[in-house]
Length: 215
Length: 258
Figure 1 (cartoon, each protein chain N blue to C red):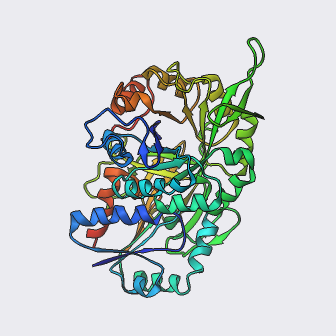
Figure 2: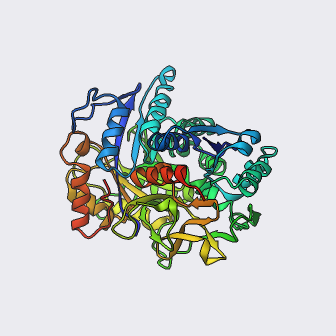
Figure 3: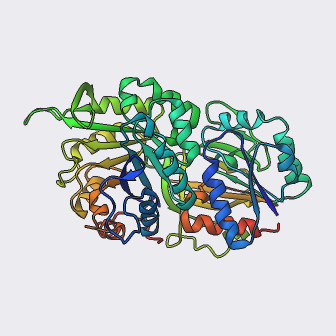
């Protein structure tokens, strides 16, 4: 079993890889590969797209790796491999991003990525720190993870979020002066706005669930 | 609901923790990675390393520390100290830092903040501001940026500077009162409030924590999103848990997962 973490020059792949390796220890040996080789992504058993920074930069970075979008699309859409997008990696699943102009996303989840707009102007942006999750529906990636106000916390750092056009794609939200998208999923594709690789217990449990996920 | 963050800060010199961490039995109290693990287990919300390595040859030691910490601690890590170029930022982020804090280099050349934010995203660029009160008793409050550990005045107004670096792309401000740092008398809450009200990004209050009530004051009076402290945690005066419980008693939202 191999997990490909896509390297497209976007920030901190090291911690995503290390957290995935740790989660893999609990689930049984899996090979975690950080790669910019489309061929490895095409044939991987699971694919992870991390991402930090601005939507347009990340999209440009992904497009700058020849054949990567095609390889991801083949692995996910044709081979049905489980896919996890993290932070901007989730946002890229949308049809469009609205950060610094309009940029096309992958369009795997219908909807746009827009700036978060807390009703209380006192609230700081970015939404940075630990927050709890409210589930919109059950999902295998959240199996066994306590959610709700008394549940475990996830670590967020973002100013934009994906507003899914189809309510069914929404898995979990978080409250920051308004309802913010925390997790989306459709078929074998899932994404978290928070950083599981930085979310201690909740994060490692979610990554272990991802490695066990058979959509 | 978003929680208030409690952040221990470790001074690291030549790859070793300055003064050591004494709150738990560590095999090696001077190993930053062991200290980081202990804080991770204790429920710290983030961790900050401040690299105070003086010699250029030893500048690389922090990278090894960051790399080893990121392998073991799945919590957010901020690294600062001597960050001068976009390459410095990149190297630290690739080693496993989540945020990089820029101090003197931002004072010397503000545009650097914008260049770093554009390259790596605003969310990972922290600007560390060291400020001292320069207004006299009875005058309107005024704080100035100081460099070199509070010895060198710059003539730059701290509040104005905070606004400028946030406009350039700083995603967070780490604000240290050089009047209070090391005194145990509590944050300069008027300074914290002035900066927190001036910018739309989170402000971390730092400098002067001696009691747990000081942490409450930093959030309540200062309007900070997070509180940073060093010695009260390192010397075991208070645990992270005790700090969070006091914040919770004061009605502030905290994370008590661990």
